Each structure stands twice: as C-alpha cells, then as structure tokens.
Length: 75
Image (cartoon, rainbow, N blue to C red):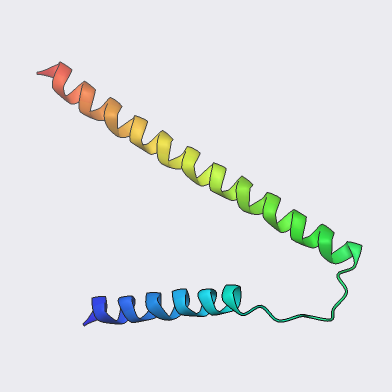
C-alpha cells in the first residue's frame, strides 16, 4: 500500500512539472537584483550542503572499510 501511494505521489509530481514546462504562462513580474542575489546565494548554499554531505558519506565508508580491514588482519 505504501509503495502505491509513493508511486501516485511521484506520478503527480512528474505530471505537475510536465504541465508547467509544456504550458508555460507569461508572468508579468519584475525580478530585482536583491531577489537574484538571494537565488544565487541559495544555489551556492545547496551545492555546499551537497558537497559536505557526500564528504561525510565518504568518510564513514572509509572508517567502515578500515574497521573491516583491521578485523580481518587480526585473525
């Protein structure tokens, strides 16, 4: 049942994004330099967070491999 709900949510998200891409509407709006700066800062923060997260995963994998190696070398 849980998998069915996840697939349904996934389908709705894909459908919504496809609709937005296929049927764009003109937005009569102005993006000022402050908003652009905020968007750029958010994108930089996103990449920094992703980099830190992957570095953390790599460190934990290395520690696990060291533990496994030390376990087998003791025997």
